[in-house]
Image 1: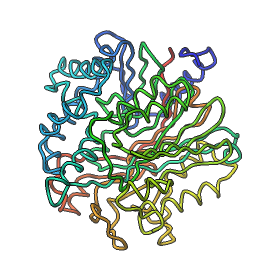
Image 2: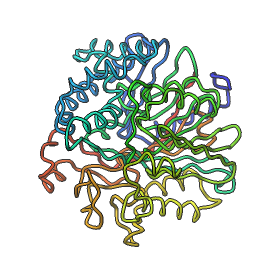
Image 3: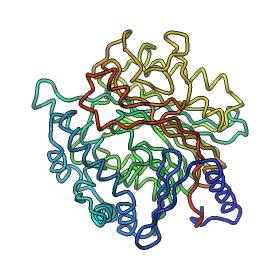
Length: 474
């Protein structure tokens, strides 16, 4: 597929931008010094366009999100020891051994550019810290637990419930083409930075339009479309405990797959090559041209590929493949509807079947915002609902390690696209959470003083509307 837009595609994208301008609260654009990169803000989102060589894209990126990078760095330095027991500098040093040897030169140049761009606006951040930020989830969630379990009696093991998602095609969708939807779940102190829409147009490879975070070279939340006609998302496999030091981190494999894969087969091949096992996911992929969808579950020693041209796949933080689930995960509550995983497996299946033949973008928005609790058989926003709200959940029915009551965690967004939107490098997104429920940080901390260490590091997320975003015309 050509990397250049046709006249028809340009018109569709232009209409998308007009929709944003008419229906959203937008800020004025800010430009990088070379005039090629720019940012704007709309309904809680940062839209960021970067283009050119790796270093040029990096500099544009860092320059335009320097204030956010400064805030993120301050948070990381404070929160990392609170949540892992180790200082931020420990992981910066570790990244030089665990991550740096596997970084392709182009991505090293891009991260050096991000640091230089931020430095140009007075932010004291090194490229080593940018590298560590990109690898943070893998270093703190996979590498460090594997090391800590050997050194300490109570190794640090974070939970890994991170998303709800689906992808559908054929008789399940309103027009027979693909519909894909996803919301990101995370601890709010990190998830609150997932509000970046990154339009990345490199000199080499495919253009990528994705949700991301300031300073990231990949998506991390993993909702993307590329001009190769590939659309994709994922949900993290909970309880996954395997990690192979000395192999390629997930964020590097994912970025290379998005940039250089011409089809889904190549995309999965990039992900399989020298995998560390870190950030193990159930990937949901779609081919805009053929309408085929794939569920690609990737563990460390095992992976599974399931295809369909008439059906759906759901993501609820559990592996379907029994080898991954039983041999590479510490626990698997996928049959227990008291758990977030078991409950969402049931509820997402119900919603797919109830909406068979009617699934479109608007149905996707409704599904992501669903608050029905199948364990209590009623509306009850909490950890067991598609739009997750750990902050509202007392966890009185089930105790799982790392799940305290009223944890400030859950869905922080919603994104939906379909084949036509993906073809035109665009998707709908809602910041805050999929249902639009506001989050007041001070009110939450006043009610739950056990989390008072987060005061000053949690942001409000007011109710925001759904907003259409599109890559800028080439």
